[in-house]
Image 1 (tube, rainbow, N blue to C red):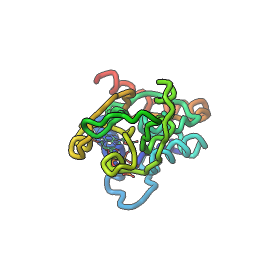
Image 2 (cartoon, helix red, strand yellow):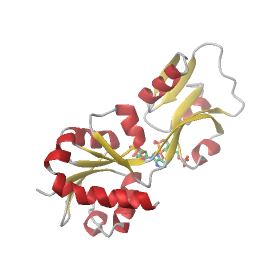
Image 3 (cartoon, rainbow, N blue to C red):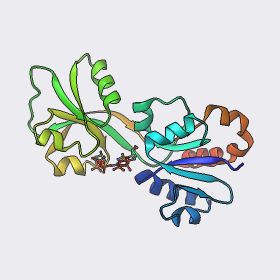
Length: 206
Ligand SMILES: Nc1ncnc2c1ncn2[C@@H]1O[C@H](COP(=O)(O)OP(=O)(O)OP(=O)(O)O)[C@@H](O)[C@H]1O
Ligand SMILES: O=P(O)(O)OC[C@H]1O[C@H](OP(=O)(O)OP(=O)(O)O)[C@H](O)[C@@H]1O
């Protein structure tokens, strides 16, 4: 059976395909997949899923390898082998507030999609907070008075800026990562080694 690679759909998918092409792999079947969520190339099977589900497919051994953001690994802490960083998807995790905002005396209200990362960050600082879980567009929360601040991904800073928010603190930098199923690494070592090595070589050049 061809090795199976789970890819995070959307942003990381696009960046992964460019990276994969730069390693001289044929990406044509992947680019022209339409709405298919499963694609086979000469060498691999690919599945396309949301980041947290990529870790689930890898954890359960359905996929041998996965391409996922470091944010997802930190948030969900799946039982997978975290093989290596990849040279794309570079972002930071930050606490942001409205410009000029003074934190309240009482518990801060923090909105985030990343409740695990947020709790751990403030626990490490010895602060107790109230977390409001949102699924996206979290920059809205302080503007609309739902929260005092947010914890979210920052790449260029444009979303924060255009919504009148400023970074208070950046506390975690990450990129996309290649993860592996623990037993696949032993059982399919021969098939997986060349692709892992090609990822590693490219990473060393950058
Ligand atoms: N602004 C960004 N720049 C670069 N990488 C990002 C950015 N936002 C997220 N990422 C990375 O890409 C991964 C996928 O994010 P993406 O926004 O494509 O999907 P999502 O979080 O599931 O959101 P959506 O529901 O809008 O598809 C994240 O886990 C993170 O690692
Ligand atoms: O610093 P920037 O380059 O502006 O990028 C950061 C934005 O990108 C992500 O949002 P995304 O576009 O994935 O939408 P979402 O809010 O629905 O998650 C993230 O949650 C920020 O909102």
